[in-house]
Image 1 (cartoon, rainbow, N blue to C red):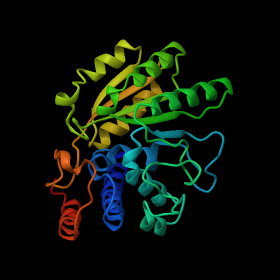
Image 2: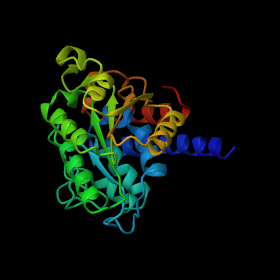
Image 3: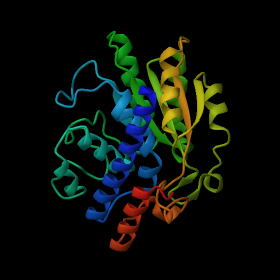
Image 4: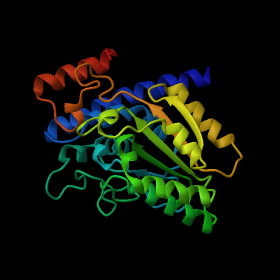
Length: 278
């Protein structure tokens, strides 16, 4: 019963998160809704269940660290941080505004709760690997989670970092791939086929899992399995998702990678999310 209650609570939080990030993008009339929505369930479980954090002590040394390698989907991260009280919800109204703490990509010097500035695709994994090595050296129990996109795996730097993680047996590193099949210019298959990402990460020495990235129980389960695993390996979770998840006219539509809804589209999107019409 406790597990069922947790799942229901997290599913409700995921709905609130989707509404919040879409409202943020709508008010700014700028941002990236597609990938924010596809990663919302993963982010919900991370920020409202899995990550060891202290919102009022964002630089707590033993915290779990999170790297948003696909930095353009920062609306979902900002919504999580605001909902977790890292900063007031009102700050979301200033997304991408001059002088705001919430810029178009995460900025560790401006935003409480952001552990590393990101935006140049492919570089986040290297940053996460460096953090994991530093924690290992310092005997720091904090883990490092990194969210990247499937299109982002086109970058060779991802695989150089993966080799390094495997060499140093970084079992405090968890990579999460938002595998929604689309990127800025089209489908991943057309732009540069990613092939079998699970097999690729296994070949690089990762303990690898494949899950439904929109199933709260599946996400909870994979983190439990990672915690229980004793293998001296880094981890990769390939989460199959739908870009624009939860909004019928955004789902699997490349154009919604980086465009804000107008008023009519926004109202329809909020209604669909509330009613679960995805």
